[in-house]
Structure formats: structure tokens, C-alpha cells
Length: 128
Image (tube, rainbow, N blue to C red; front, side, top):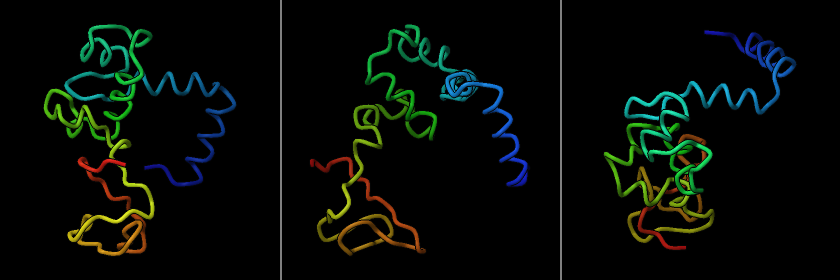
């Protein structure tokens, strides 16, 4: 595992050699999207039967969300989550759930604070 200084040095070298678009392209060509699909081209063809350039905004958003947790958000395994990606279910700051609040039993208004870190409550049924 690389140390922090080594990571900074590597980041500087990458930034000097490649454009941000090239770095993003290399990442998208190598990241795992679930269901045996490595890279954006395979994922686009595998999930939607078309090249990445022809994806709708919603389809592209779904693929972007898959990178975070491919097995959790796989549309073939959890089709309900496909209709409500995590970002769309995020509770705005300052909102409070009814009686049984967020994960871990937070009952205060606003973001849940457990272990010194703020958490955003997720609720698939919440309408803004």
C-alpha cells in the first residue's frame, strides 16, 4: 500500500502527463460495474445493449452509481433501487424522520451524528 506522500507524488506525475479527461477515461475503462462487466463499454453494452455515447441521462446515472457498490445497486438483482438511485433518496439536511429516526437510532433533527461524523439519512419512500 502506498504512503500518503507516495500517493501525492504519483498524483502529480499523472496530472503532469495526462489530461483530466484522459485520467477519467482510463478509470472508466478499468473500473468494475458489476455482473462481470469491466469498463464503461462492457457495462453499457451489457446492461443497456448500446454504446456509452447513446446512453440516456438516467442510464448513465445508473452506471455511475454502480461503481460505488456494484452488487448492491445491480439493476438485475435490485430493480427497485434502479428507479431510486442513492443520490435521489438522500434526505436534505435539517429534515427529520418521524418517531423511528435514521440508521442507528438517531432521533435528533438534521443529519445524524454518530462517532463524530455526520450521516445523511436515506429513505426510499421520502418525497421532498
